[in-house]
Image (cartoon, rainbow, N blue to C red; front, side, top):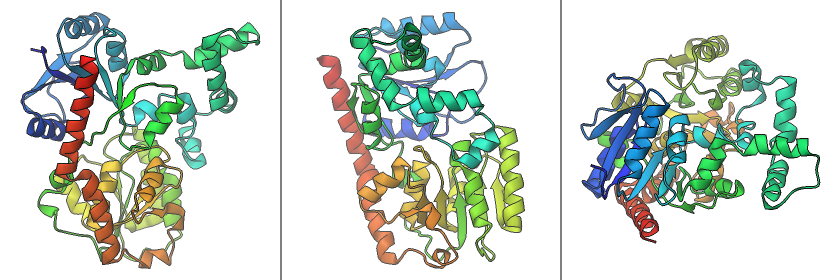
Length: 407
């Protein structure tokens, strides 16, 4: 039954079970958990018995499902990321239904042309071979804040431009994606400073906080451990090309690593050609130091590897891998981030000891965080991601949704 419930719409993902556990701990029996799939098979990641599978094989299934939500007296629909299916579902919901967009990353940075063109370094773009001359031209001149501003002005009245230019603006920005995010009442970014990006997109939705899981659950029995004096290095969080692995691996190839292992998670997020290319470069640049992690691991096994890594290097330009940053930062790892990422600017702004990835050198590799720096990072992270802090975020989110639904 959907009546008087918060409706959560998920995909099959490793974050879902901990999220359900968290929500049931804080607001028990107030939510319905629906996992979208296009086939009648067992989920790969989701094991919670509270989940209801929703099989959507075609447009008719989707419309029937949307009608099911439309005819229920729910408290709000929570979209955990926005893929094509969820965009279509949201587009078919009544305006009166409160819609909450939990931004994961790909559904913002890969879906909005102005942001997407900045996800990759030059080295990554060369591997992906996605930019023809026409695409470079389009990204440079047609997808930018200036042309978007022109599009917004065109909504208020005709511009003094040739009709073909107005049509280009319409084609670039008046997409299903953009129309749907305009319908969102509330947005929940991973990092608070991402809300500024949302506002630049002229999205009027209200901000609300949330975190997928808490430090206590993420670390479990490892809560009192740290990685001070640990020598190994973690690079990236997945096989997604947005990790921009190549720059880091080639940079590490110039560093005297000694016997340090360089762990590179590659079990999900990228296609086989990209994964094989990264493995080839890693083996060439780092030799026996390179350890690709190609198989999916339990969080317990993954934490074992994290506990051996005193250094973490992420080269994302977009927001990604925040859960890894939280865990590594709590454990006392020295964290290097791309200075252009929202994670770098956010964690710097709250006082954490975070370093620009280009500063990693033969000298810095010998200098780990001090105990004082580790405990200060830990203090900051606990204030934001400990169970009581996460519980408060859920309560604030719930209040915002209920207030919106009752207005």
